[in-house]
Amino acid sequence: MIGHPASVVTAAVFDTKPYDREALQRASANHGIEWRFLDFRLTKDTASAAKNARAVCVFVNDELNRPCLELLAAQGVELVALRCTGFNNVDVDSAKQLKLTVSRVPVYSPYAVAEHAVALLLTLNRKIHRAFNRVRELNFSLNGLVGFDLYAKTAGIVGTGKIGRATGQILRGFGMQVLAYDPLPDDEWAKQTGVEYVEAPSILLRNSDVISLHTPLTPETRYTIRAETIELMRPGSILINVSRGALVNTKALIQALKSGRLAGVGLDVYEEEEGIFFEDLSGGVLHDDELARLLTFPNVLITSHQAFLTGEALTQIASTTVANISALTSQGSFVEGSVVT
Ligand code: NAD
Image 1 (cartoon, protein in one colour):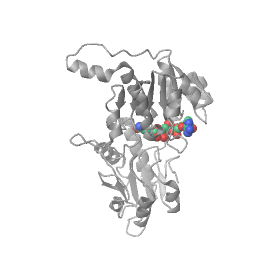
Image 2 (tube, helix red, strand yellow):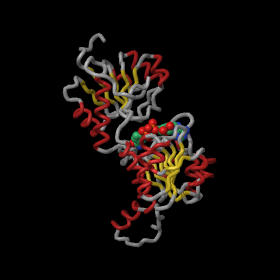
Image 3 (cartoon, helix red, strand yellow):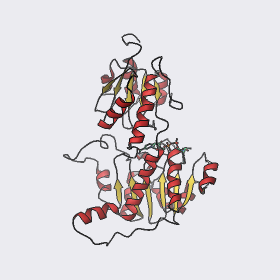
């Protein structure tokens, strides 16, 4: 590329938070990467901030639709390096047509995400979030805090990739029976961990006390949980979603919560989280009425897409991202399984 010394790659990092900056800087010593840290998200309106950069580094809520990708390509960007696993926010076909390479982090601590899913489950079931607040107010009453034993109950894992398997394994450790659904089952893992695959998601929904979603967001998985599938769920069951917000239809979920059908819902992701999650909006007004409604239910626990947020995961994300960006120079190559286009 004209104007770029071969050994130094400028990478514009969108939606940067202090923990991203720290991990990327630590991982990139002597890699010849010049970081341009930007605290706003990448959209078609902000794409000009990638001027003279060969790579952009993006996260889950950057919007890489065709107009945005066209602007990046026109400015000479060669690589979109996602610092996450999912790439549902990138128009991959357009990226291919525009000859933009798209890379991601195919693997990082699945335990970080699985453990967060289980943290949400335990907190909700034993009502730790309510107990914490009560005790701080010197309210030592236990009324309304009854949960259920997880031991001998049934958990349903939808999607048994890296994170789904880690979650299933933890729940087996509690003595739960674990059912799983995945169009590509891992029979060896199931045998080893005592997990039972079912033939259809409906069987899993009908027979589980806890349902945890671990699929990527695709046209097929969008609204896995919607009015008709909520009907199949056991009354009093708990739903956990740490994968992608649009796996759950929020309107249908709110109806189910209003009717008291579900014992609890733990969400680390939300359909309309862009522009809300990761931001400090505490001094302002929340304009999203559905999120506001969800926050009123005592049996709904929401975290702001933080399941990945452990030191181990950040270090692994940064080292894969740095390797992928370095692949633009003669010194590096893409990490196996990273390239999406
Ligand atoms: P993975 O690719 O290892 O596993 C995904 C699994 O889903 C695969 O086994 C696949 O066969 C299965 N699957 C696909 N379509 C399905 C369907 N219709 N029904 C059932 N199963 C289906 O991915 P992973 O590393 O386990 O990650 C899963 C998802 O978790 C990611 O796509 C991402 O969206 C999300 N995630 C969230 C966070 C967070 O911080 N909240 C962090 C990392 C990943």
